[in-house]
Length: 558
Ligand SMILES: Cc1cc2nc3c(=O)[nH]c(=O)nc-3n(C[C@H](O)[C@H](O)[C@H](O)COP(=O)(O)OP(=O)(O)OC[C@H]3O[C@@H](n4cnc5c(N)ncnc54)[C@H](O)[C@@H]3O)c2cc1C
Image (cartoon, rainbow, N blue to C red; front, side, top):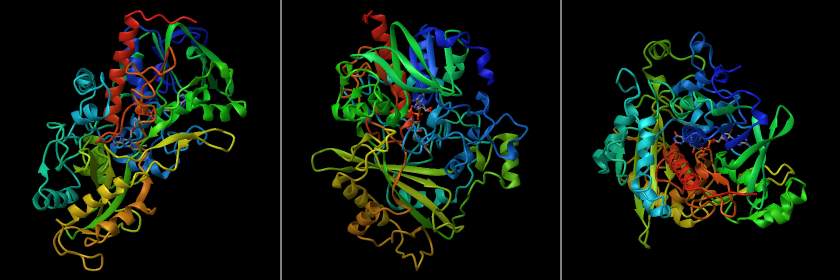
């Protein structure tokens, strides 16, 4: 049994009634469960996956970690190896049609750990009253107090693998005029800024809610984490939930809520809308289709019709730009066979190239729109090439579109009879303005590079290999919107599919229901930065809202 089973509430948990049932021990779910259990609520956290970090009992690891208490999850430098498969950490195919983690910590157990505080404008411009930057200020502070953001991740305070950083700085700061900033000191400044990435690592290892919030929750006797428990649907009548139906080891069981109890879905931006739809909560047409297959247990007269469930699904459109310079020395962290000196530096001192996920710099800008709005763009520079461009002098710049984009899709259920939730095909570039803005941005920063072509590389400075430096805006636009190994790939930053003010109210309660909440990436609008920091703020704020409405004695009766 994993070590955590010793402390928590362990007796006959399936026969008990719970004040709060949280579905998904991921990035947001762990935080919500910790805060509700801290407030005295009897809290059950259900996770379909299993162990991940060494601290949870995770043992998946390369041989060079044998004899340590680390799993692959703990070592930041093993981040990219997740894309090679062969792991129990990822979601089974019938859970979500996307590349996502199903394990303790959710995607925070497999992500790169980039941990950027969203600028205040993300809350002020894109979220409703009650969720403006002033409203989430305390939640943000609680988050930072529990899980700091760090720029110095290598425990010896050195930076490694820096040739790409140096060249990028020459390009963007010296030639293009971006400001060189410390992102943690100026989180609100995201217009033409360049700097070193910041991460949620702790003492040279992966951090995140599993290392922080989950540990405090596990020390409480009114809390239980149950792994291997897949929630199939919520049992409710007209939005008043009484239990959840869970599949465990092949059998189906019902776990009951206590009177006045709450269900919180934290199954991720694809999973949570999917679970609502499977429970008879969502757009009428979807419910009708699922129901025709016999998959919704409650009668149509007790459904909750909410057309915004699954609507507005967002992911960053991205393009890889391969960049070469004579001064660049690329670096790839190897899963099985690290360079011995780098391995020893990590094992003995949590330092060196394995102490980070290989992003050496990041930058942001906004593109102004004629209607006064602005479209965010982000660049992240990695330590090695990609695809066909993997020689020693090559690094990869990943350019994303971020906040203010117009393109969104929705969570759809598969038509193969399983009704597996996944993204619709119009997530990327369905609004032509997005591709225009991103192409114009790439064009503008290319103007600050030395003149070069892929066949005649610049003698000094960076040469783009897959998109020529002298491309026109139109050529860049075509490149970024045409599928290739470098363009129109999913970043897997799914969000915004059950937004605050549309799908859930400002207390995170699903509109039309009495005691069913969603708190995860679903409720957050597209952010200027990588999503996890904002998702964690939403978890702190969402838990605060739930406790507030609980305190004020809003009665829930059947
Ligand atoms: C490869 C990768 C790299 C990334 N890198 C970064 C990064 O560096 N920085 C950043 O900010 N963001 C990054 N992201 C995105 C970020 O990790 C996610 O946006 C964030 O973790 C989402 O949190 P969440 O709480 O919404 O869901 P998740 O963390 O996905 O949690 C959902 C949980 O619910 C569980 N679950 C789902 N369905 C059920 C069910 N039916 N029953 C029980 N449990 C269920 C899942 O197993 C999972 O544990 C990355 C994502 C990926 C995939």
